[in-house]
Image (cartoon, rainbow, N blue to C red; front, side, top):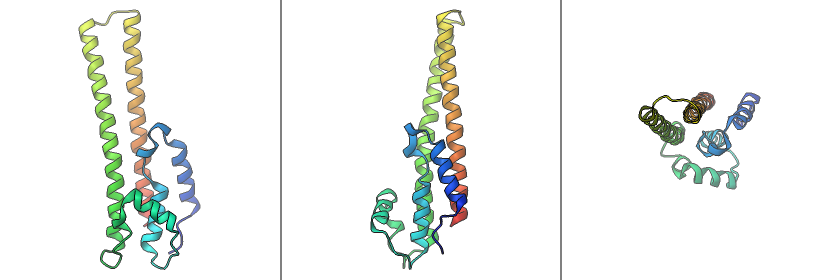
Length: 156
């Protein structure tokens, strides 16, 4: 198997880099690292770059890169995918819980204070706008990571 560096994968890497919210970059899928992991897991004759393997082992754990005679490559790749999916789902769940909590707080304040006008209503509108932006971010985050999983699993 050749090193997986086709132009469509490079384009997706660049697209992913451009779409990542820098504040949450560590919660997006590690696409580049997974691409390298595929190469090292499936290519037993590959010259291993020790620093790259060490970096991937620290990111994903050693189980995917050791025991090649005991576990098939598919099983080791599945471990990596499961780990990334868990990381992404945990972040998305925490983010969604925060948004829901904020919405409940805004609803309580609105119910307590009434619709009103002026500065109080402006504050409610700002809160709702912020929560809508957070929901839009979460939808984008899910979509980008879903596309990444589809592309990386096709490469395996």
